[in-house]
Length: 441
Image 1 (cartoon, one colour):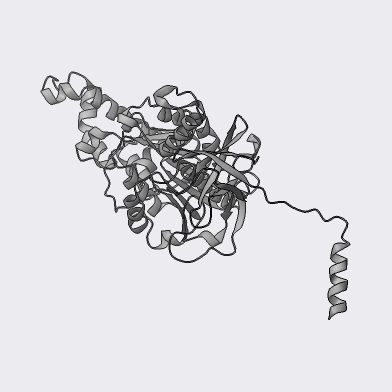
Image 2 (image 1 turned 90 degrees about the horizontal axis):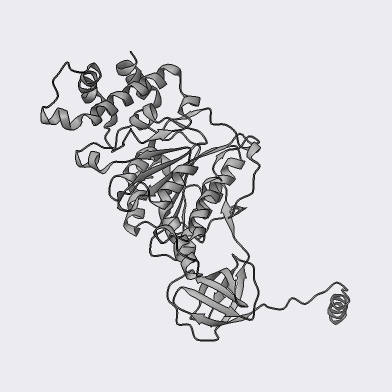
């Protein structure tokens, strides 16, 4: 026994390529509740660190550098940290757990399961920031996707691999419309990112919108509004990375993110904490520049045949359609669905404002008679809205203008086509048949 121990020990000592690996550690120099500064260590941006002594520890992520100090953002809640507390790296720059092991599960921004079903086993990994693709690896959008909403299927047809924004102010019905689409969407996998929403809404969305069969093919990343801004951004990156991994397997993925504006708000908090100058509406340049990096990761993959159809909700602060986040998202996305508060006040749900809404790929995926009928409905609706005040005041004399007469006659049918109960599902074929049957002449 002694001889074997001696020989093994001596052989270990004889290893010529042995290099000691010292533990990297620094000290906390500044902490204001969110932003921390550490000295004595140099780590890449994105590294997760543990700060504090045993019993009073908190996790933070490296977000930048300033005057020889490492800047970190708190990932947890308040902690009883003391000056000169130790700062130790515990994880490399981010990777997300991905794969079929996540189906039916709910995770937080750090990838930890929060559904009480135990640890996630057998998952693969994918970079949080994604893998850079050539523009030529992205395919065209050529096949429609059925989302179960008549007005969208018929008038704003969505294609597989399209990126769409649902734009509205608060309380107009964005989450309800998302739930209608999730229940009926024809997709292999549904990835849902609930970023910056109220905790009550997260529980409600899971129990009412992602129930039954939809839950078993869904992955939910939930990061409520009271979580760290870094975790909110990580949640958006994680949801996109999970969708990318499924697309890489050749699957048709529906990515839902509620909401893109909360991600921009998190970027604004981080940018201002780093000292960036505030520009439009208080957003630093980095917060707006982050949106294209996130949105451009969705789309169709020519190599695998998989696709990510992405639907983002965009909160228009103060119902302002020129809000910086709304304006930036509108320029990047392949289409946008605008919800109108006045329609909601008149009891029209979903409150889709057909006039300013557009699907930029509809002409590529819809037949000519379908496109023609959609344009006829739009023309009638636009004519009626332009002359609505005259008609309601009784100032318009019937017969004075044939176009206005036709719009008035068609208006009840137009409103009936747009209205739909939140529990109703209208398939793509039925929506097109109704549209062409009434407005196809």
